[in-house]
Image (tube, rainbow, N blue to C red; front, top):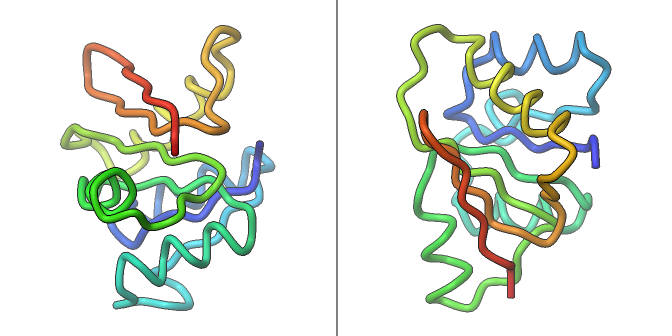
Length: 119
């Protein structure tokens, strides 16, 4: 899966790096800035895009409030040291042969990757 919707909290530098790497990345900060998280979920789902975010609220919306998920969510749960760090972390996930993102809520910290199946 290379179609990504980057939440507006993903730095523009990271979005640029992912695009330069050939990924199909749309950014909410470019065209739907200020959209609600529910609207962002709906967009990711309707466009069949993985949602890349630093916002923990998406887990609440999906697992506790019953909102339908997009194909995958990657929740980056760390403060990046540089604006392009999220891109390298995400690229590492994509290149890791044993990690499947589709159909999963993936939480990435500095030390580990945890996954939970999406409902």
